Length: 175
Image (cartoon, rainbow, N blue to C red; front, side, top):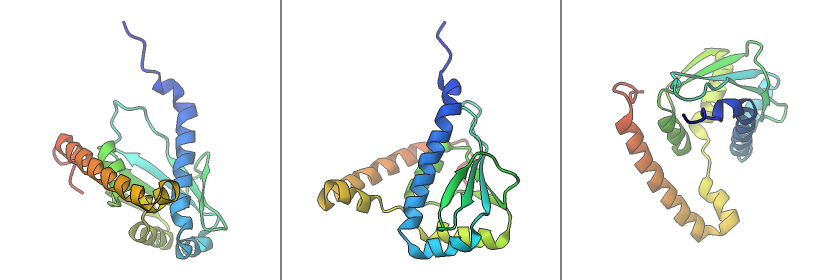
C-alpha cells in the first residue's frame, strides 16, 4: 500500500506561503498604476475576504484569503478574518480554468457581499488592471526574448484552457 499524499500535512506551512506570494503579485500589479493605489488609500484598514466556492473535494481544502488595505493603497495578508468589510466568493469548481482565466485577465464568476462602495472600487481595479508579464520579463531577458516567451505562454495557456473547458463538468463552464 502506498503512503498517503503528503500535501495535506504540508498545507499549514505551504498555503500561507503561497498566499503571501499571491499578495506580492497583486501588490506588484497595483503598484504599477498610481491611480489604483489612490483608489485604495481611502479604504485603509478595511478588510477583504476572498473565498473559493465549489472547490473540488479531491484537492486539499484552502482557507480564505484575508486582505487588509494598507495606508499606501496596497494589500497585506491577515491571519484571520473578523467578519471583513467585503466578502468575495469565487467560483472555483474548475481550479485550472480559474487560474488560467486569472492569468489571461478573464473575470471569474463571483458573488460579493458587504460595502458596496468598496466593492465598486475593487471592481474598477479588476476591470482596469492587468499584469504585464511581457514587460516584467523584458527587464530580465530583454524585449525580444520576452516577446517570444509571452507568445509561447499565451499559446500554452490557450491550449490548457481548451483542455480545462473540455474536461469541465457540464454547466461548470458557464459564467
